[in-house]
Length: 329
Image (cartoon, rainbow, N blue to C red; front, top):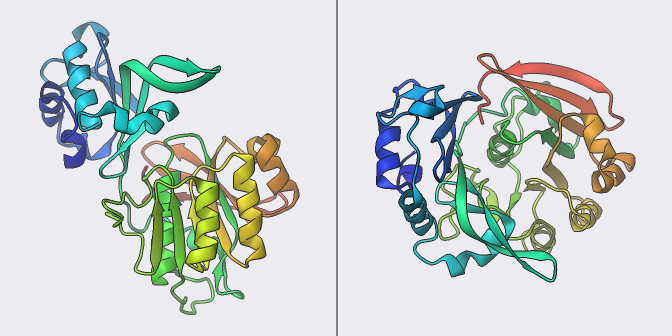
């Protein structure tokens, strides 16, 4: 949380430091909107914060960040240089140290009908990234191909903020260390893992060095577009497995095909509620129909219990389901 506190305006940082101690470890989002109630999300439930930093459901009692709060926040997020982050502003988010993503909303500036960047930003959504070692432990035996000695081509599916990135981060660590409890009880060889971390969220690199534990045999392309990064990994780093977050563009599918032809396993994530959602999306429909992925993991959430993992084979048949407690977002 220190990396988050360092980019918050002092008044808001002080309020969060007054949160009940049992809430702070489970903080998932901080939403700052100019002139509107300060909002947090804890274990999937939203609360406003009052002027004493205490949670409330009353919008009237909530602290309301003003223009100065938002100005200071933007200065801290951009290190006082908005122009150096023009590409991030065009995409509508900034990733800060620690892998935390800050979503932005405000007035769009268009160029030839396309978004050039954002200005007059008045809404911020800070999504807290956490490292959960062992988040994938119970799932890995279901994804591991013991005969081939590696993971099956896998697509992790869920709506936003359900733990996809946390999960693939731990999958990278497990494959890179050989920390896999195989169903046959045999040891697993540590594999060479390549992460294409377009949003700097999986490994949270600082000056190219991961700050999250992604394993000793893992190489990271930080801030690199997914499709181009996958091709660079194939040519330069000879990975056994490539891990990538949030696929969805035609060029992503092309790069995945190239990886398959090179004998490299793919672990990827995509937004969706179900296997049917994925099978209906234009770009992903092609990958599903070609049976590229051997396993699909659809993540659901039961608050207070854990994550629900539903596992499907390449034909879309559910082959297993489990509740995993140690898989927080």
